[in-house]
Amino acid sequence: MSIRERLSGNEAAAIAMKQINPDVVAAFPITPSTEIPQYFSTFVSNGDVDTEFVAVESEHSAMAATISAEAAGGRAMTATSANGMSLMWEMIYIASSLRLPIVMSLVNRAVSGPLNIHNDHSDAMGVRDAGWIMLFSENNQEAYDNLIMAHRIAENKNVKLPLMVCQDGFITSHSIENIELIEDDKVKKFVGEYKPDEYLLNKANPIAIGPLDLQAYLFEHKAQQAEAMKNAKKVILEVADEFEKMTGRKYSFFEEYKLDDAEIAIVCMNSTAGTTKFVVDSLREKGIKAGLLKLRVFRPFPAEEIAKALEHVKAVAVLDKADSLNAAGGALFEDVTSAMYVNKKQVPMVNYVYGIGGRDTKADDIEKVYEDLQEIVKSGNVDNPYRYLGLRR
Amino acid sequence: MSDLIEIRWHGRGGQGAKTASLLLADAAFNTGKYIQGFPEYGPERMGAPITAYNRISDKPITVHSNIYEPDYVVVVDDTLLESVNVTAGLKKTGAIVINTTKDNTEIKNSLKGYEGAIYKIDARKISEEALGRYFPNTPMLAAIVKVSGIMTDEQLLNDMKGSFKHKFAKKPEVIEGNMKALEMALKEVEKI
Image (cartoon, rainbow over all chains, first blue to last red):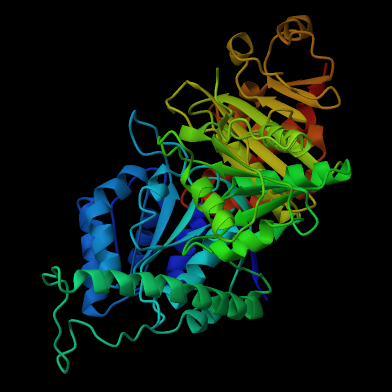
């Protein structure tokens, strides 16, 4: 039987880490992810875990330490947000190119400046091309479940890529909500032991990690990373199947909420998907065929699957919680529109940049998007595909 | 009780409005409900106005925004009545609970024509009598439970006894006072 609890998103992440019991956790505190290493360090002090906790002096060092621990053959985890992620940036690319399956909680927050501690997705979008698997979480339950599945995906021999689990800073990280926890022994069995093929502390098979890699090889190595990202798609689904057998909770690349017969649809990630579900339900009561595609797996990007899921819809709005400041549209919008075009699906698409710097996204805002979509279906025109939602004029 | 009850707390930093919202979430959780308890984070400092929220339902809650049309509002500090529009969006079918010693006319005048039910309680008197110090959050927690009917008095008292034992494991001497504050508040909250 699962354990009925009420936890904040940060507590849920810390408890997942306790149950995973990694060899090394290295972290530096930064709002709103601070509580994760804070709670975890308590577990270390109380002897609940065997983990070596490294209280580093910066996020750059946090990532360097997790890289070192993984390279040595251990299982390593960390957590950060926003400018902590910015300071890690150099090491983020090194972690993925060395094919080290580190698992990180990224509690999404606006990257400065000006200084803001609240939620948007600019930290995650800044590392979207860094070669990390990126899972997004609607609530505390999904932040927990995604972490429990993370090592199985990242450490798979056909993948060997680092993985980050995102959740919305404050909105879910600091909100107490119901959650179903899995028993410790079941998590332990599910996650299993980490047995890398090659690692630095293996005297029997000495290797070099991270040497100079010039014109003759870097291209091939990058292509191998890209191949691993493609392989991850199959592994993500396999692990989700096994997870469903254990918990009854179903995961895939994305969740389709009342999408199969929808005429208008929103695509978004993290906590806003929950608010959108609430709006979809109320619109359905009025006979409006609204639906939602909540993306869970942002990297690898399930382009073909998204195109197929949206092909029957008459108009789609993609919600970006980070502005790409490129005069064209947000990152998620560009990925989804590209997926549609390449897969020859002609559906009117519109982009809304929303929730920047913690601007609250209300049910009314989401309703406005569905109203706009109905207008687009009626007129057949998208006069301006790159819009704002909730911006004060 | 409708499907979803939404509560907004107004307090000042240091008075425990956030803690009260989390305790309410805890107590409702323990009666089998789905709950959310979250503060609106800002530049927190002692004495600054703060807002916290609760959603309580028999069904899973998916909305993740602040609360704009609450069923209930709790005002932990009546000096906020002058500076914060505490009844903003408050449903007429709901109620507001205020920690105050002001007279009824003065309270009504400060609520800008709010048409729903108004309750008052002297949480300072209760807290000082029961605890010897001013911690308004415990009486206000009992007051909102009484007014909203989220759970019975017995459910609240039984549950909080357990919570206080855990929360005050290192200072058990305050448990009795907190329990007394709850009991007094359940009796003393009054409709005006």
